[in-house]
Length: 273
Image 1 (spheres, one colour):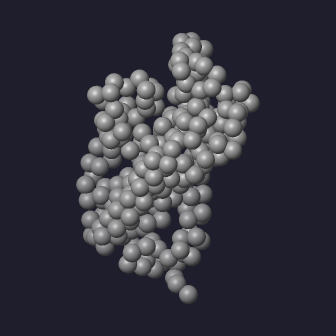
Image 2: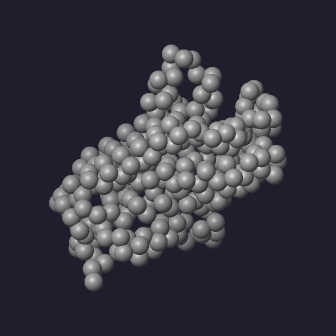
Image 3: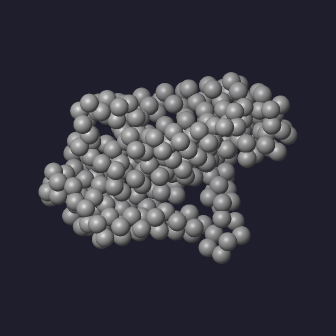
């Protein structure tokens, strides 16, 4: 019977991970707002407030519409924006949290042979879990308001979100390990995420990007995910097997590279911290 505090050379054994991960994910969700009156409710309240502000500005004040999207003609810009923005917020929050996952648990890392891999994993999963109810609520709104008429097609948003989460886990493992040795990583990450946000089709449709810049936009890995959400939710069409293959490749490559990188640097954590 493996010990809960033994760490195999490559990955934590699946049965150990299965028992520990839910506990640490729950801990991540509670810890951020520990001692507050609303507690866990803040996890949903702050993102929901952000959605309300965007909706007020772009849906009612500016009332911008995008032509040529969806089956119903012009689409309100706020619907297009939220299709890509909500998953992006989960993705960026996951990476920001995971970058400090090991640094924030230095006392545990220094004492005992604890499975440190659990910390970035829990933070990435917790970040995505916070946004899942909001994303599902937005999808329900699209369906009730008539913008989405194919509930079967919409179900494919979940596996796409799962691939995004896997991609974030791989990157989170890499960032959390690298941050132990290079403390500038979280600061550099904020600038990289800003660049990724503005070079992915979140604020603008891919069709409006000049042809000369299309290669740059597709070089952004989040473009694959943002374009998939837009096609599934607003355009009611299959994203295409090429897009699914790209998302799967990003997720698999990040998991393998992040896992190997983390395990390679793991033995030196205690000495550096």
